[in-house]
Amino acid sequence: MKVDLFFFLFSLSSYHMNGGGLCGVKRDIDNFFRKELKLPEKLAQFTDIRKHPVIDLKDIIVQIFLMPFYGVTSLLGIDRISRKKYFKKLFRCKRKMVSSDSTIKRVLNWLDETESKSFLSSMLTFMEEHNLLTKRLTEGSEERRIGIFDGSVMGGHYHETFSLAGKISYPVMVENCGKRGKELPTAYKMIDEGRALLGRYFPDLILADSLYFNSNFFDKVREGDSHILIKSADPAFRNVLMDAKLEFDHKDFFHSDIRDESGFDLERMCSYKIETASENFAGYPVLVSHLTEFYPKRKKEQNSESWIITTDLSLLPNEIREAAHFRWQIENNVFKRISHFAGTKKFYCKNNIAFFNLLRIFFAAIAVFDAFLTLIKENTNKFEKIRCGIKPTWKNMFSIFGEYFGTGIFRY
Image (cartoon, rainbow, N blue to C red; front, side, top):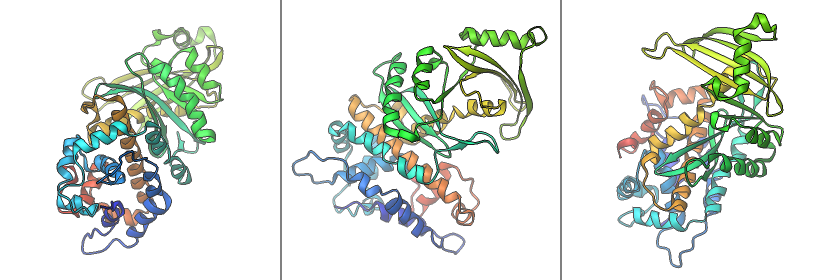
């Protein structure tokens, strides 16, 4: 049995709408997955320890890789799909199924963690070649490399994730924390490993929440000349925020150099005001900003207030505001997305090694699929033919592709 992932991908491009073909999309998909991403070589790096395997290890890895695409939220779900004719056809499988959930579980248990880590990070070169990992915080501002640290719990497993955020979200590293409260020590270790892994691609700006608002984290990030931006809800959390609050409340008395901007955000439909002052924290000069926003269309909690601190003194007030909002990329485009499409929030897996092998393959998949859709959108005419008027959400786009096979991708 030989996997034919590329037959599956090429089939997507032959979908016909309004009686017309999608000229050139098939060639683009071929180039994307085979020549540019070089997915076959990346899949080949996994070592099979079995003596006489009946099912190719690549087939099993690809099944896991496709779970977010199909919206399969459990191994039992992929077990059901692997018995379907349309799915077996992708792998040219003549057995009664591609592989069972028990087979996948066994493989995940003995799969080498270093290889799943390498597979996840192996997408980096491709992402950089296509300039997918840089971001302009505001129109006309310089392009920045941005990284986000955050911890989460999925299926009872606590983990720390380091995501590169640009035109797409790429969770390049994820590590087991063991238990709640160990996020910070894990993050310190990941910063060192991330610098060794990413080299010159390590982010210029690191975004984080209040958990990381301490001198040790500032020292660790600033060791490599990267900057930090942290968003906090409570000014009483740190004295430096209270000092800035005192300045904002008594501007005339302190005569300090306070910058402020206000306006209306059409994208988020809110009015805002941001005040920024210069302070010091942990021995570093910093900017402290007080951001207030008003959302007139919300029924509850129309007013939003937050405090932002950064070591990047070159950031303008509007860039600071955008960076604070951009921190949510890891929540919305990584954690919530993978939980929705692969069920990781409630994914029961007792073995830590098995779970994190699974999670790394999932993270690689959502980054690749995100890159695929982002690059397709650059060709406006081709993309308009594909979406055929439907709102181009992640779920809608893949549901269109799934119709070609006569079944809904998100059925299971």
